[in-house]
Length: 364
Image (cartoon, rainbow, N blue to C red; front, side, top):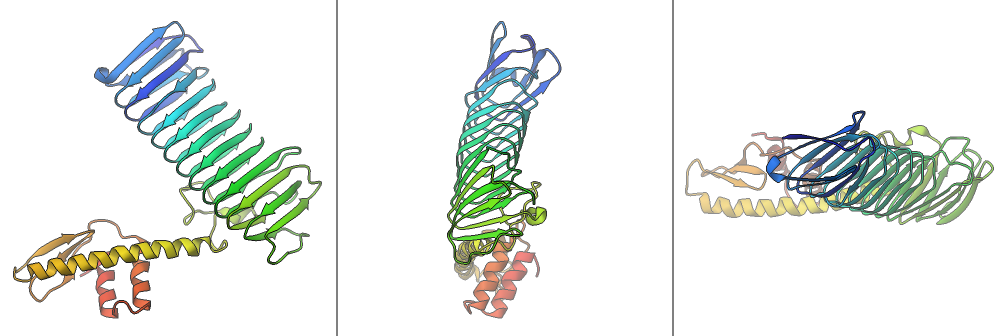
């Protein structure tokens, strides 16, 4: 169902509750276009004030200068081209924002992405990854549980991140950039950057011409140029500062930053640590699956042409056979690595490893 409301060029729209996904787009028209299931939709209007609630998905087209307040969205939300004030309180899915002015956000329970804000950005809690770029105002993030990618922010920055942080900054005179991370921090700046860096971490690498190395230092103060911007980095693991623009060209091993263009390959011990953790988990899962297969194989050895589905594989347990058939879903690199690791530790034989690898690849 489509419904059109006339509420002026600068309406104040309040969205009380959305049971599904929410899409909001600003347009040049003066009307509000609402698309939703008629049975799930509730709309109230008093002049330029409009209140909307929907038990399922909702799509809105608003005048670009509208202000919007969103109280709760149970699914994902996307917001684009709304230049009035934006306040979002509770988003239970992913949140994507593009081309806005100032934004105030309470709680995002999944991943958050923003590109293009002419004003300030303030977020209390992000439970997943965050990707933020092209913000002309200040950025304040109270808590990011996972990874953060931050690029091209002209205002002050204050963020607290649970895992890794990658920053592309052109520090402005008088600005303060404060970043606390539970794991690694990578900072990339132009070669002629002017900043005073106060750094604290397990290992500190300042890859900058004219800046001497300090091996085993866990805290440093480095002045670049006239030092007119203040950058404070506190990392639970490694810090790297560089002016190499290609230091972050891809992010295959770093968080949920597809398309952002950051590279952490070879940085510190973070990747190695994560691979080890993932390998241990995958190894446990493979071993448990193998034990389940063996138990079920024993129960089915009396049945000819039998096929047993266990976990991600189908196994042929006909008498005299114990071979995996085509896997049910795409194989992960972690599972391949776990098998190779088990082989290197002599937990399985080469013949058993071949069978498991064949299963992963969908071979005979």
